[in-house]
Length: 90
Image (cartoon, rainbow, N blue to C red; front, side, top):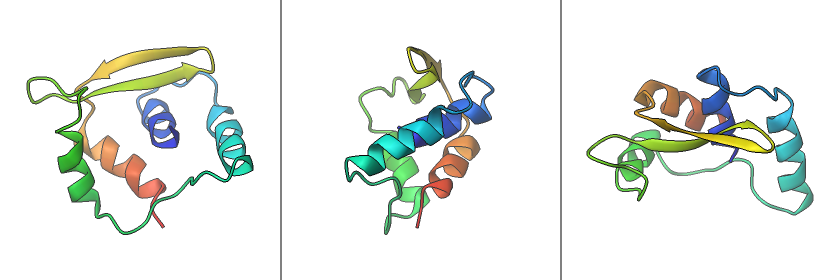
């Protein structure tokens, strides 16, 4: 969810600029992880290609615009995905 927020922000779609901070607080409150370890970004990018939302070699992401609203974005640049994944890597 936080990676999706970062992608949405980088794409200029996220209108609620406080959403990632609020979401992270909620996830932490419930003991859920907000960072990941061990998986190299290239392997994650490859796995995204097998996701059910991928179609005809193009990725599709459900990205937040605000708390109540999302949009589907097709063919997000790999550089943007890598950037967002790296932000959540520890």
